[in-house]
Length: 208
Image (cartoon, rainbow, N blue to C red; front, side, top):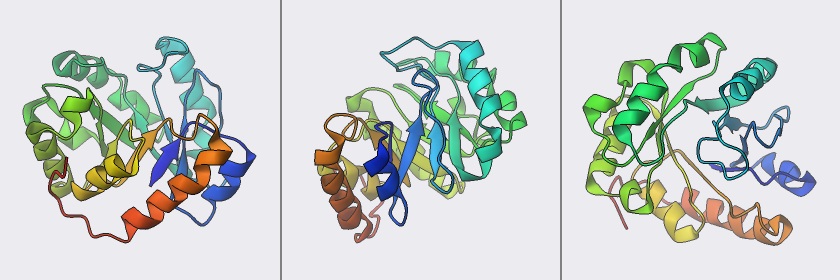
């Protein structure tokens, strides 16, 4: 699946019957659409406004009626710091679960299996730098996540090549900003990416 924070009428219409979904961001105030899969970001990587705990928690509370369509909600992380992410995210996992959302934990640069709270999460969100995402240590974590039956999501995927790489290592979904800019122009392109990628078997190997 491809999740986008670029949301307009054309994109919402295209979500039905395809593998396109929505990435909702509290800082933008966008909302779920009935029947369309979505994930809730935490704004920790947002350039709009920094992470605000109260705003994020209020957002989770307000969206609970749509929880059945939610793929995951992302626990707050620290960009580029695996240890700090573990400490911060573990403070919020129970809260996300209490609201009824599947929990996503972000693997940041330097993450190891011992820093992932495997038994407490539903999704491994592959974050971090571009160099980290499909590095050997990161792919090893993706493989472990799939072996444990978890959903795997890759952030910042904005080309067919990157989407193919994410698919090849076993990811279930990805997101990017490709539809945020000139979305009507890029929408047919992204749908073509999805059709192409989903026609291929996952190879479970890094094709960087």
